[in-house]
Length: 276
Image (cartoon, rainbow, N blue to C red):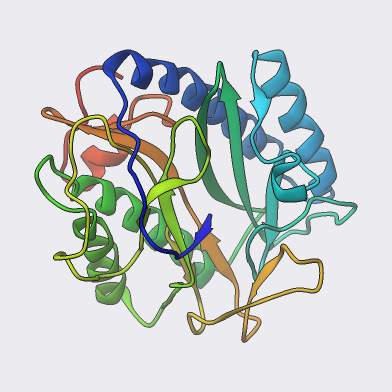
């Protein structure tokens, strides 16, 4: 997750470097799959964090987040009205909660970054729909990316889909980003429509992390005194989904999805690159 700032040089990756990023992406995807299965009433966010660190390190990786600008944990665990950057701790999850888990790993110098919002036990229809709309918006953003297009196509597709679904708050203060030898690189990837004239062209070798955040209330947020946790300004619940992907002549290749993005892209009428 990244606050918006001025654009700098974009790092393009060779096919061999993208393959290395796929190794990092798979480790992140496997970690999130493990954590999704561990989410249950009574489980603490610290327990999820410990599970994530053990899995990443045993898989030959290093947690991207731990120590990043002083962040104290392996994952961000954001519960209910916490949008992003929640710090894991003794808080026990309760039936009806939602928890957004953001996870990053480094393998041989290359980063993967992904996030998922998971319901805890049974949640109501309104909350379940929030999660479904946010996740589909992410997939539609990736499906809109084409070689020769612009990064603005991604945000435009996300916003157009969200606006068609109802009165949701689409967060603007925090955006997606390029990723590679560092976790946060250029270009920034806003989750809303913005000027195509100023937006970078999508070219082969560009790797992006796309991550819409969606609130049941307004889009506005505030930062808590811990200096990390971002919450909704009105106390409404929030969802956050993210994947790291690249664009090829065959279509998107989702590096943090275990199947390369085939199922998620097919659900929105798009195709993933043949190589997972």
